[in-house]
Amino acid sequence: MPTLTARETHPHRPAAAPAHPLPSPAQPEHLLDMVHHNPGEPECVSAYTSPSTLAALGYGGRVFMIFESAQLAVDWSDVDPGIFPEGSEAAAWVERKREELLRKYREAREAGLRVYCQCDMVLFPRGLVERAGLEHFGDVRDERTRHYLTILLRKMFREFPDLDGIVVRVGETYLHDAPHHVGHIREKGNPRETIIPLMNLLREVVCEELDKEVFFRTWLSFDRPTSENYQLISAAVEPHRNLIISDKHCEDDFHRGNRFSRFLGLGRHRQIVEIQCQREYEGKGAYPHYVAHGIIEGFEEYRHIMEPGEMRSLREFVRHPLYAGAWTWSRGGGWQGPYIANELWIDLNTHVLSTWLQSPGESEEAVFARYARERLGLSGEDAARFRELCLLSADAVVRGKRGTHADIEGWWCRDHFLGTPPLPDSPAAVARVLAEKHEAAAIWQEIARLVREIRFPDPETAVFATVSCDYGRILYTIIRTGFDLAAIRQGYGNTVAIPALIAEYDALWREWRELQESQPLCPTLYKDHGFMALPECGGIGQFVDSFRQDG
Image (cartoon, rainbow, N blue to C red; front, side, top):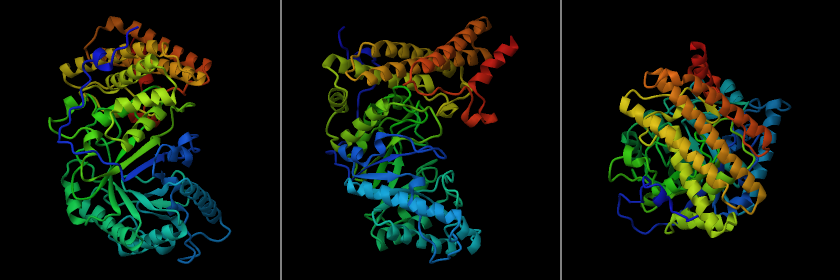
């Protein structure tokens, strides 16, 4: 069959048309990776937990997630031996954690990587908070909080000598794997009361006194709703060579349909960009979703949700004078499943992004072609088919999940939770959403056909690629049936179609379960209820059942 480029088969995909003049691209000062294990669960098995894997890909550093943070394992005995009493379970837990982290940090250092750990602020041992009476420990203006936080920071770097810096998060505090600590932050989005005092403290203690690095995340603190807070913080905190702002490539969270971050390139501080390769809101690697192209060149939906002239791609940002590098999340975040037994789709995104970031003068297509040829061993024709499949996956996901005009919120379906299909208020938007759901299902049919034409040399890769494409086809057809029923519920469809849609929905779930039962490499399936089965999140199963009851 003749090989066609994605542009020939899908004219809607935009060309990379930069909105700003482009000076020569820069090598990243920082190229970091993190595996974000599910909170409260065993660590995931991944090639990317191996320091040698990261070093071989050219990464310069590894970020250990919050439950691998030195802040959990410092020795407080010289402050108060009763914080972790000798012989207690709490003391034993801290000692085990210390030994684990010293080993992990040492292994990363020996592989030639710089070592960083995430830190939730403010997080202290429960014993310290209780014994010192720190009822206001979440207020960084409180003198006693600042005193103990300074002690903590100095201890972290003294007791963990391989540690080069910290990645600071104030937007959330997870305690699932920190049973002997408590965390809180007062007014996390308040620049004057919280962010500026905390950032200045970190600048003084970590950046200046200890000459270590601080990456301060904007997440859920000063990355919204406008740039006013960001500019206020930038003006109030003096830049420092060791102080870098970390911001996601898109605003809010890692959803397709969210605009490219308007905070990248703002202010006076150097910045690194955060990139999620596993896509917690879009399958977690259970099916193909190739995002490297869209992150590097700009996603197609930006034509509809962004203004002309706005920066919309990594290719543009790497040429900005504030650009200091990138931080990929090869695995995670999110919660629970789907759980995967093969990292093909995660590996693809991580390899292409990390390789391109080290050579941003190259085209994304050239980097992709090398991956297909050298990593997967594909021939010319098979590599072309593989690229078409991957680009189609990006088209299918945005249409099937949210829409090219972001007509609906992305939160309705995340991790392995299928919530109630939402529809917008506008009739025109409803029509567009329904059309794109049908288009997505059709694209997945094409993906499932195309994968069977690709001759993967590795048998396991061949099986997983085929199974995961079928997985995506079934999932997004289930989603399409749910939206068709939602349209009928809102008066946009014919009630005569309800029995056939329910029958199709049931048949798809049977096919999906059969796929999982018959294929050991099949990822775990979605749940037919919303996030964490919370009542307010509904669920597609309950929604479809309501039609059975009506009938």
